[in-house]
Amino acid sequence: MAKRSAPEVNAGSMADIAFLLLIFFLVTTTIEKDKGILRSLPPIDDSEVEPPIIKQKNLFTVLLNRHDQLLVEDEEMQVKDLRQAAIEYLDNGGGVNAEGQSCDYCKGDRDPSSSDHPDKAIVSLKHDRETTYGKYIEVQNELVAAYNFLREREAQRLYNRSFADMLAEKEKNQFNKDEKLNERIETIKKLFPMKLSEAEPTEN
Image (tube, rainbow, N blue to C red; front, top):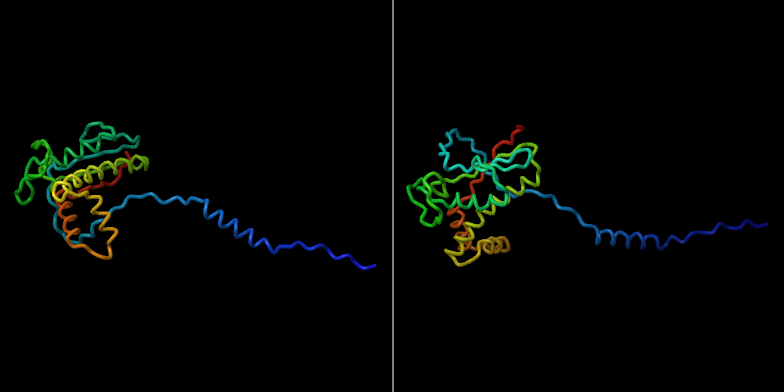
């Protein structure tokens, strides 16, 4: 009696099915992007020149403790109020810069107890090691937004154009440099230079 041959499974279409599943996975899957802060770090200074003495009124102190509570200039403050407080400080124009020039474009109260000039104004942010990352990013965003607001105002005043649009155009045409555009961007940045200092986090 002849042996009956075992039935074979047709696996010819398995590769097609696997390929379709792979395409489905690639189309439907969302890949999370890493969150971070875009910052250009200053170059390492090997010189032995002593840092200049900074007057206390030219230092805008922002403290963020382990409970995510915000203390600005020794006063408790909500994050939603931080941007306006930073704008008023940076735009104060209560004195002169290193060259002895007053800030004729500042629209602040010119309070002698606040910052002398945008060129001298420094924002100092200090946080605790147990501060949540989300609150830290939120505070950073508000401080950067204060600089962006003032730069936007000056771009509209000088060139009747949005500063954000100028940056977007520069990024779009990065391989075809527009010297006039770059000069205008640098001019606005010099009016309100971003001097955002971050102190070493504490464990208190």
